[in-house]
Length: 216
Image (cartoon, rainbow, N blue to C red; front, side, top):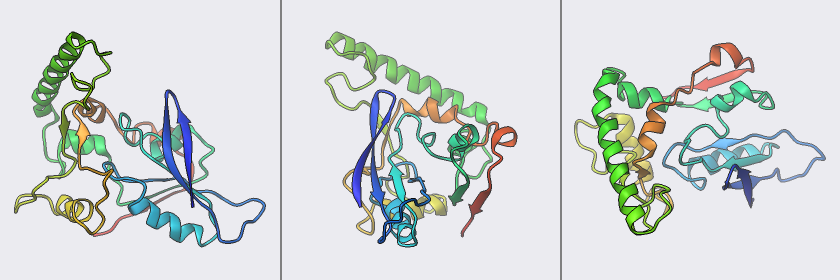
């Protein structure tokens, strides 16, 4: 296993490259993307280690925090046919989840107020940063990271969906907690997530084989 950097626009994504125990001259490769809020050292590395042991080369891409799931996913495969197949494990369309709620029962229009609130916070941050001589990139006024929101409930209760409670138990406890996965995302991600649809144009352009694994 070795660390790699993948250029993407103005940033470099961090990744881990897993190679088979024996090196053939040419081997099939897989790109594994971890769940939102996680890091490459968690679930994705477990899959990568097991699959590389079976003879596959596995670069694991760290997600672009502003795009979340558009780096190497079913969304990317629709337009990039270098991906020969797509497989998901308990996939979630994060855009639908944000618009319709975890159980798919929310009225999307109720989130207009959320977007307005986010816009006000971001505007205040930008103004404060401008006064402090910042570059207006959306970070905090004094060079901090800006306002954040949790990925999963920081303290699950009886009303927390079981999937999110399970996510807390994995990502936020010693079971798999990692210093770089702090259960938070920048508030400016909210409108990006609200406008994202993993399935958009899939019926038109996703012609590669697809394996969708669903578990309870």
